[in-house]
Image (cartoon, rainbow, N blue to C red; front, side, top):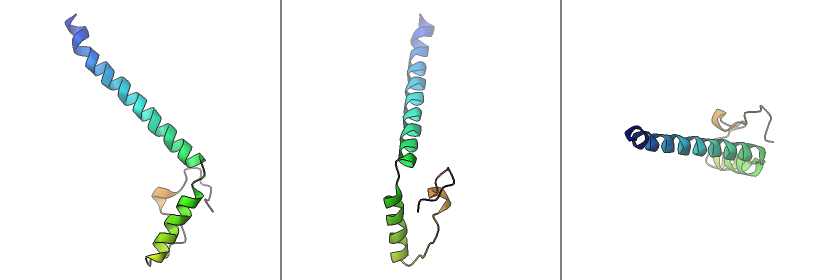
Length: 70
């Protein structure tokens, strides 16, 4: 009985962590597949307006598929 009481919070935290992680990956997948071309072009426009003439996206913003946003 004591083991059940001590393990319950751990199991609940692990279940919540797995659920939240799966939701985060799902939202990322939906974001990538949802076509964020307008947001990316807006980002590049803001950077070029500020004086940083970037022709390419930063590595952290490139799509994982290797396809171009433009």
